Length: 210
Image (cartoon, rainbow, N blue to C red; front, side):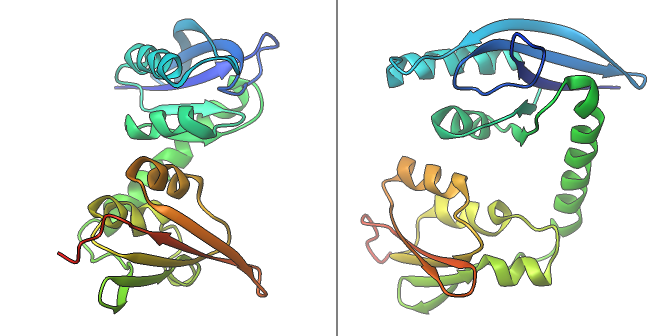
């Protein structure tokens, strides 16, 4: 049995950002040993149109194939969203692959174990305060259920879109919430409250009450 982890490397051999030039390298772990399996050049520029970025990402996703773990020293914006949409687990790690491949694999295995453990249990999530208006405190849920992620709490709910407003209390706004909202035409309002928290409201303009 083998495992694959992909990363983007700069000319110095260190993990790099998706927004720039680098080489996508896929490492395969067989019998406890990591070896370079395949690689491809990858670069983006500020002048790239959205269509060009999507083409580059489509080529990258095709190159990754069965590999669903990706490492960069910074993963933000549309490129990050496309990786997530393709089912990849994305990690932000700085350094050389020899120093982080095993650590990333362990984190991924722990995360998948947590997901499996709660799969047969009802997940906490938003509750309806008034017709169409929902509320959830990610911070409170994570305090009671360590290891649960904001995606496990909210992703399915946001994709269903059966809400007028969704009020969220969290430590910080998860980047994927912004991406998901942008893709689905939701609007976001946010404010900092005086207890090291952020209160945000996701508004669904297309909600019909059905």
